[in-house]
Amino acid sequence: MNLTTALARLLIFPGLLFAVPAAWFFLWVERKAVALMQGRVGPPFMQPFFDFIKLLGKSTPPRSGVGGLLMRAWPLIAVSAAAGAVGLLPVLPSSGGFEGDLILLLALLELPSMCIIAAGFSSRSIFGEIGSAREAVLSVAYNVVFLLAIVSIAASQHTFRLESLAALPASPMRWLGVLALLVCLPAKLHLNPFSLPNAEQEIYSGPMVEYAGPELAMWELSHGLEWVAATGLVATLAAPYITIWWLAALVFVGLMFAIVLALSTLASATARLAIDTTVRFYWQCTLIFAVLAVSSALFMRLRS
Amino acid sequence: MNLWNKLMCYSRRHSPWLFHMNSGSCNGCDIELVASLTPRYDAEQLGVRLEGSPRHADILCITGPVTHNAVNAIHTVYDQVLGPKAVVAIGSCPATTNVFIDSRTLDGPLNKHIPVDVFVPGCPPRPDAIIQGVAKAAEILAARGNNPPATEIVIAETPAEVQP
Image (cartoon, rainbow over the protein chains, first blue to last red):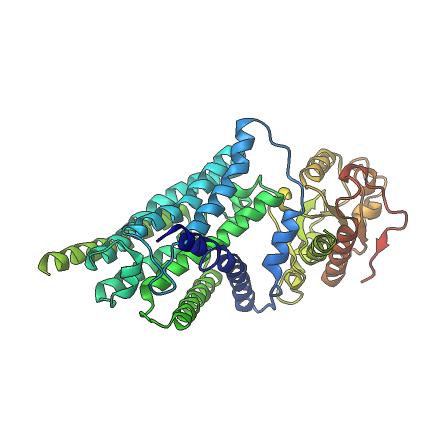
């Protein structure tokens, strides 16, 4: 992958030019799905865009010192990491990529939640600190399953390269891994059964509590981009390999939309779980599932 | 630049985020404010979102006749809402202190302490009146923008009254 294609992927498709409108669209789908499930009409189509523009026009509280500088930096780091993760997705066939880009994608996907943890602690608000602590516990809980699922997929197909993973026919092992990833997505995206870190009612949206104006807009955007990147990763692994580029892109976007719809419906149909229940869920139920997937993937690899 | 201003104005009108504050209310107006977000009234169609943190909000919705205890809290929260911002006084209490008038525990009405943009009268007001008040406040907010600094907002001589 040379510099031009890398830049084109980062900035145009599936990078920023595609990902930012897609992020707004997914945020709208999330809110609209919740509204429809509650029997409401819900926000208009352009709502996340209006929210973003409005937040850009608001002022921010004065921040001083290193703490203030860090508070300004976290949302920007989160947005750029999420945008980079989207840019790595191999939507178009033969779009390049390099050996091990799956690992980079995972790291970039993890960075926004690290930023959320750091942001909550640097805001020095008690609600932010509680939110950050919850986010840290949650990320330790789901990341084991998330990473084991990725490792099992990569081990069963002998590659850490997204492009080749997308090209290879799906094995039963891969479907198991995709299922495990789907179980982790609500926690990764802070959706309802596992929306502890940004609980609106108990801790006033947690780590975001002190953020305002353009910084909050960046957090909203990074949340939307996380939607795109995380659902895009699952769509990449689940989509059949198609050589016609426009069909491939269409299938990719369609799959993402279906995942977003399913997750939003789940979010509106469930209530928030307590932190111990959440951690127990991930450690007890899904860890067994993920260990099973990894061990059988390794077994298959040794046998082949 | 003009186009950007127009877009900003339009966005402000279509995305009012509320922060709800109780300054000693009997809870009657509070449940009506929450009722305006329920399926029957669904204020989210106008982009309304009830936020937990005053930092996120554009419109401060205050209920209650302003007790002595609440005065400091009102000033703190008003300063925490970042500009451009608007204030909606919900119910008769913040407007006139209502039936609690001359009570020694009160320091009302509300516009003695902070500039109020829209009064929504009623005891309690209907949810549709609250939604209309919020929509009006969003329009005021959009028209005013960042131009006058938030600390120098003058009290509107004839506050935009909203009849249910």
